[in-house]
Image (cartoon, rainbow over all chains, first blue to last red; front, side):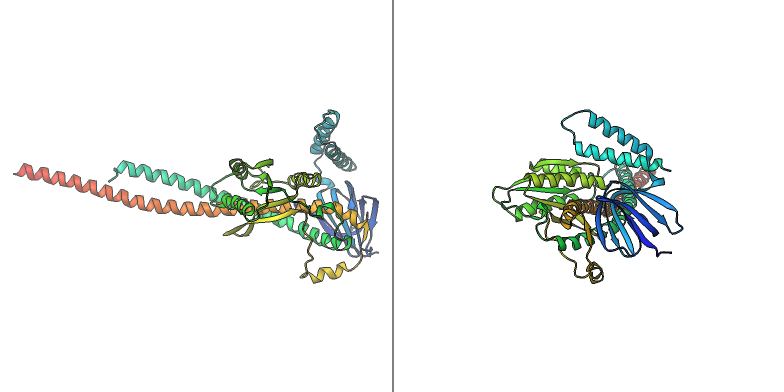
Length: 135
Length: 296
């Protein structure tokens, strides 16, 4: 069996994940990538979405990440994200209301609103809901 | 000589005040713990961030982002002033607003225009009084729980303002938490971003970073993405530091107030006892005088 690679997911508020993994699959901004032990040093920004990894016992686990970037080194992967949470910690209710709010704002056609921000918020909420729904 | 009743009322009043200051001290203590926890939680992120940014900046070179390039003519200066929402924390807010005032005084620029982003009611009040333009005010942030989004929203406005030419330079004034007894007002330049210094002391780390990273997209694009975020990180850190400082300052101030209350109570009790004694003596004199008069 391949050697384990260490995964750290850190947000400004706290450390979300810190454990040994078999493989990490992350949503890079130019496409999803997988990291195994011995990966060449690699740095990329991340899309809003799901980060997958297999923990030491081989169970698949999911973490939601948004506005982040990842650094892969031969022995570890570090993900710095503005927000991140494990699948079981996702607050679906909150995500749903955030999605509604963003949709209302986008459809209002008001010139004053920040379209980009509303779109990003909507995207974030949708990927949270999707990820929570895969359980 | 004050009357007995007056002194008694005064003692009661001071005792009530003492209860309040003591309670505020304890609240500040527990909030301080929370704020320090938030700072501890943030440290791993901040450290990792500056590590990555440092190694990237070296690769991408000086002029990778417009945020790094100083403006030729500096007229429009924007300051982010972090203060608390509430008072009763000693000289905490005055130190910060004085920091802003001194910075303006010590760096005179002819025809400069100053504008402010205020975190905290006290700073906003000061700006209104001094008639500085306020671009933005955020209340209810410093001193309570807040998320990273506060810093990124505020930071984004600053970056946009800098790129639009609304601001030529942006500074942040916050209180650095040195120790429980010491909080220092600090003025730091946010934009244009000062050249990123490589931390020479971290030899162990830089060794590892000798290895060339593959960057996706290009190092320049990555840097362009990370630099604004670095700004948010700094604002967030400044807010955390200011919050922690506020609670520490309030703790000290309330501790002193409680002590002063104790002194006052001691003095007033002494005065009360003296007045009581004087009244008893006067009564006795009356009784003795009356008895003597009857005898005669």
